[in-house]
Each structure stands twice: as C-alpha cells, then as structure tokens.
Image (tube, rainbow, N blue to C red; front, side):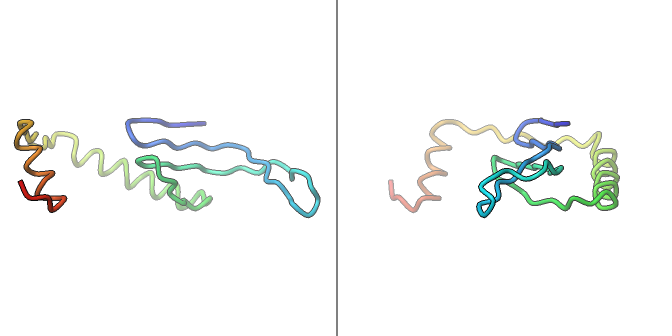
Length: 91
C-alpha cells in the first residue's frame, strides 16, 4: 500500500532486516515508511494511533476545504533581493 502526493510519501511494506550475527535476513515484518520533503519521519506502528491521526487529518481537510491562501507574486529582482537579505550578502 502506498500514498504519494507532492512532497509526502507513505507506504506499508514488508521488510526483512539483516542479522549481522547470523549473516542472514530475518522473517519479513510490516513497516510504515513516511517521508515528508524527502525526510524520513518516524511514525508509530499502532492501529489505534493511526486511526485517530487519520480522523484528525480528515477533519482538518474538512475545515480548510474552502480556505484559499493568498499567492505571493515576486519579481526576479525582488526574489534576488530577498535572497541577498537572507544570506547576509550586501548588494
């Protein structure tokens, strides 16, 4: 099972971890993989937590359904100036 949208990726997979002492792979175990902005995010393997978290995320989706955020439009020169200020480089 997997989900992917923009910078969020999540899947449920079977993983066989390598046992150095036995020099062999163990039995497959289920594991949840969650990446946000290409960074691994640890998430509990707990059905109660996942159901509660899923319900919470769904409720946020309902609350913000009609909310539109203003889009900031910036010219190339304005972007360069913002980057200069951020980096501390004087123009």
